[in-house]
Image (cartoon, rainbow, N blue to C red; front, side):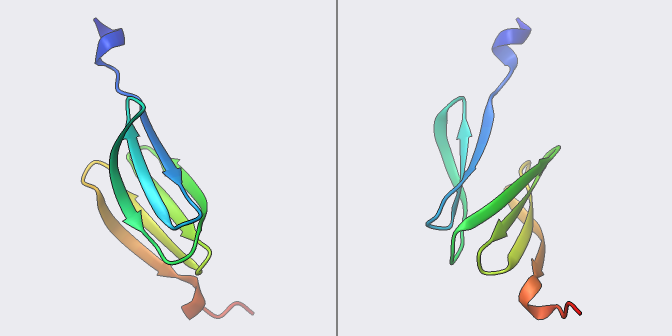
Length: 79
C-alpha cells in the first residue's frame, strides 16, 4: 500500500545551533550543531541549506547526511 510506504521527514533548526532530523515524527538524528542559532533553512529536493547567525551557510545532502558546501559570508566583501 502506497500510503504506508511514504516516510515523513521533518528538519528543524534551533536557537542552540542544532539541526535535527525527524522521521515519522520521531527523533532520528542531530544533523549538525553550530555556534549561534539557526536563522533560516531551505529544502531543495534531497538537499537543505542551513544559515546561521554566525554568517555561515552550509548545504547538506540529506541522502548521505553530509555537508557538501560551506559558505562563510564573513570572508566575503560586500560593497
